[in-house]
Length: 430
Image (cartoon, rainbow, N blue to C red):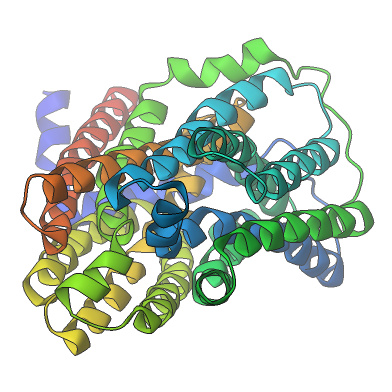
């Protein structure tokens, strides 16, 4: 009888998503272990977010600059453009490996110290990439450069979220990730322009300098922190015992591979499908960056209102816009519009990061860092599948269809997460 009564009261699907998101926002008020009743001043928070976002800007520039420079890299090392795309996968693999390994090994390290160490490794990797003598060494150094990526964003997100009230966590995370999205708007187009005009190695040397600048900013502005007595690698590994952590990571890894399937080959799509000159590539990168920034702002605001609704809605949105990209890529104006709209799909970034904080309980460092491993698995999957489609003779525009299919698969993973959430809530009610 009790189960029947519960079933009669079951809200409609849309209301369920909103209710779950609202409850998660409330229940997670104490989920950030370093959050205290006394929060720092607004100026302190702003300076910390600026320092952390600067690191995100450098990492984002280094990650995405290669997209517009693949033809130049291919020419330098005498390989094909799809073969040059393997360096994207190498960087992504570095993120995938580095994020969980570093998060576990550095579990007893103060977050400020860890951030400084990660940015020093990042700077060294990029400066070394600029001096790589062979394609093999360049690929290896891109792997090394990717190692600090996920751990940096994960720890930076935790630091930012711990300094604001719980109902503003997603926006704090969004401001840290703003460095990443601004990189696509300014850093990537500028490094692509100078890389094409001067030498592509200039781009990676510049990224290394940005890493060193971030070290200075973190040193001065991020306050020292104490390591919890309970911190340890066993507690962090506990994150992987939670099914919702795996499902959330799966949404990122599968559902957002589509964006990278398209963006990895945007330079060739611009010149060979839309028949635009090479100088139009930075313009496309700017449009993508504007879209990512718009998506980051809107998505972080929406995530503080409805966390799961933002994630599910963005997956459906990506299916539509990636399909539109393939249908309109031959038209220069519609291509530009589609690239902008695909960039807006980044709206789920802050939402997924915040969701992991909620479901990871006391193992947040590993879970938060693993989010960027998942995104870079998406990067690797997208670039790889896009390359297969191109090599199969379907053309660069077909990468949008690949992306739409991946987003559709991500929607199934999201549905599984919702079903598990509903089952757990029903069990608690009984």
